[in-house]
Length: 305
Picture 1 (spheres, rainbow, N blue to C red):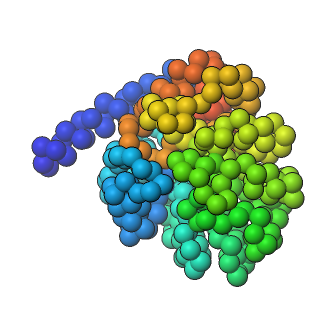
Picture 2: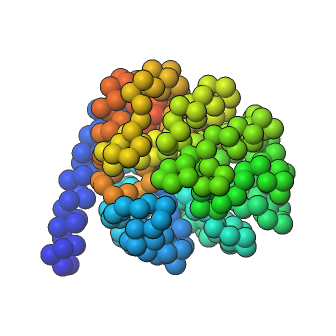
């Protein structure tokens, strides 16, 4: 083992103890993280290369904290005590989603803690492969409006949304305009989707940053809308998309519909910092217990590990 890898191992061990101390203090059996990324190696390599090149959607230095092999990344989440997590993966063009779904089904089969994740894209055949994924046991879908550059109200997606609403399968959707706006990002397209599919279990990724207030309003209006905390409230995000202090009351009131998400491994800071950022909101231990475990356990009908 090299000196560098030995140092990283020691650092991870220290962090794992701190993460476990966080949820143990709350009396939880562990954490549920609804926004972690696992995908085929060649796809993830391209994602990391994009971040390394300071891509146009980020426009800033974005060092990947957990640039490790797949087995090591799974092992780290286990060491942190993340009892359940996802494999958020997404296509940027037609013809990708179905084979990504095949990969993620295999990943879930060999990774018991992973919630079986699938994805979709507006293309011919989308209803067929979404139905197949649901029949194979998919527990959550990922929709990336920004990267995919598609309107969630695209007519090609209508039968798929209806199918997911009927099946009660949650969809984690990157639909906010951060870190850079896209043609179909923002609350407007999502509001139009929900007007037609009000029972769709929709999880707004990144708390909808930077349109926090508008997405909180959608959660207040629709009982099946939730938000995940991915990167929100951290020092990194607060520099360019600060969460409005005046919205903390609404955040507290919606405590049963906020879910822990982190973006692991593609984060430019330690995993622990996301938890610290939630704690310093000072919304109380009951809010933290709900966000870090209970809300997701209820949504996905999970049992304690």
